[in-house]
Amino acid sequence: MKKNAKILKNAAYPIAVIAIVLIAWYFAAIAADSEFILPEPVATLRALTALLGEPGFWTAFGATVLRAIAAFISSLAAALILALVSRFFKPLESLLSPLVSVLRALPTMAVVLLLIVWAGARKAPVIVAVMVLLPTLYAAFTEALGNVNRDVIDMAKIDGASRLTLALRFYLPLAAPLASCSTAACVSLGLKLTVAAEVLASTAKSIGMMMQLARIYFDVAGLIALTVLTVIAALVLEKLVYALLSLSFRSWI
Image 1 (tube, one colour):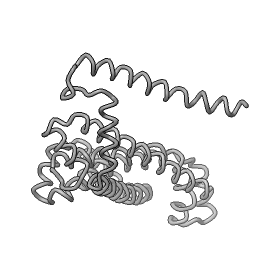
Image 2 (image 1 turned 60 degrees about the vertical axis):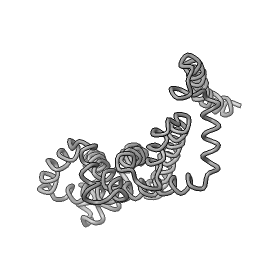
Image 3 (image 1 turned 30 degrees about the vertical axis):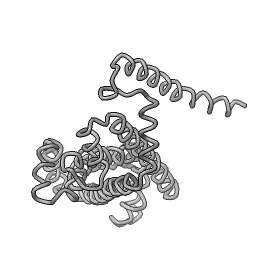
Image 4 (image 1 turned 180 degrees about the vertical axis):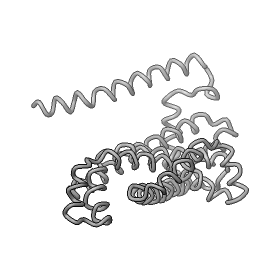
């Protein structure tokens, strides 16, 4: 009984927040009195349902999600390798530090415009996402690895553990719980970055392009529906990645 009550209590908060948002949205739409400014929730729900029934939407949605996942996996692999190597070779960490700072400081919009010219509208969103996710993940992994208990590492060294063994059997399992939340958050960030870059690049057959077209034709209900679906997809991806990471570090331990 207590477990069921706890589940109901945890579910009540997000349901209450959603209800409050919908009520506020409804009255704001009535005040706006124009579907070109703010459509009612019911009109947006109709637009969302219509989108789900269009084959073209699923093609665009799949392409956007695949770009986001490709950017996330590439960034994750590169950041993890660089963080582990720099843990053993301090000169590399000193070399990467200013590069990471530069990547973080780059204006994303300006980079997108340049990449459209250099790489094309399809590749630009992936590269932009990588340029943001890579330094973010590298910083998270570096911090997590730095917080690993030094006594455990020193004991492993005394026992003759190689650097590869230290990395795979000690650093990764001990750092994974610390980095899992920020790592999972990066996959949803990657999807948002990908969609934003697609809007600027007018990438064909993408969620970003559908949003651009909805804006051009003043389809506000469709634009909001696309935004809602993108948020849902980002949250699902984030929860999925976190679950996978949790399973992985539990198996290590």
